[in-house]
Picture (cartoon, rainbow, N blue to C red):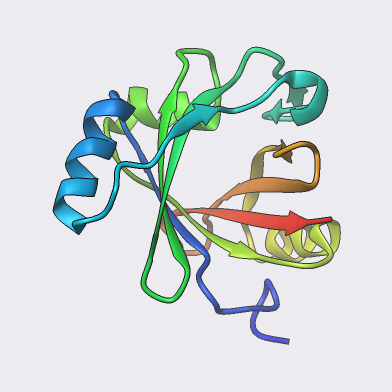
Length: 153
């Protein structure tokens, strides 16, 4: 096993943005790639989003993805104005690097390991058509970032 989460292979780097259309167009120009589509965070019936331990049916965002390098994604996230880990970041810090993500197996046990390492679970839910889940954990013990764990079913 590699470290606390069982892997060191980075999957994704995500940025919080105010205007996804403007940012994705500019980033596509910078990278020399086509402008990707963007889409919403999904229906609460599927996502079952929980923020700070409570149901968050209205928390959502718009997302766009670029694949770069060896399959690493750059994710752009525009929050919808409702309390969430995304909106809190935008309100407190403005646009910028939000999280780094890793694909994992055994989400629940890895969350417990991360909490034992001093991290705090702040948001979780499902993605896609419910074929996977995500968890955001705030860094701790000198880790100044948000970690996203992704697990496909």
